[in-house]
Amino acid sequence: MAIYLYKTSTPSTRNGAVDSQVKSNPRNNLIYGQHHCGKGRNARGIITAGHRGGGHKRLYRKIDFRRNEKDIYGRIVTIEYDPNRNAYICLIHYGDGEKRYILHPRGAIIGDTIVSGTEVPIKMGNALPLSAV
View 1 (cartoon, one colour):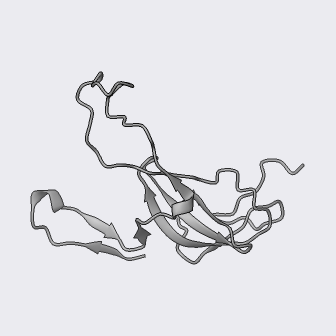
View 2: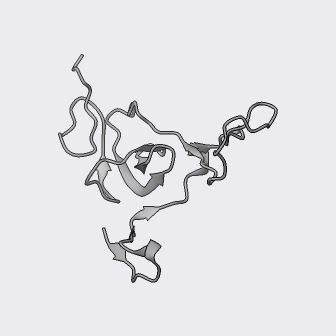
């Protein structure tokens, strides 16, 4: 996991670093757009909340919080930044061909394998149930 430090050319680029492992192009079937205008406007398009507007269009990523692919191993393919939740997410390719996003487990890198189920080893990224029913 290489972090690139750049030479300062302006005051805004001071103390800046870029993580080479993070990618920014999301999967098309795992994202969807926000269809409303937002930016402080009502249904008629009139500004009702001042000092709001601009900003970059953010697409919503579908995150798998349930982790219900039981006993199927998945591999971390990419680590991306999610602008909607100020966190990193991982794209997982499961053994049965399915692709899903999960929240990035701290310390996980590209190429790690994860699995969820009742009889999985306890390590970073694996998901175990809260109760063994």
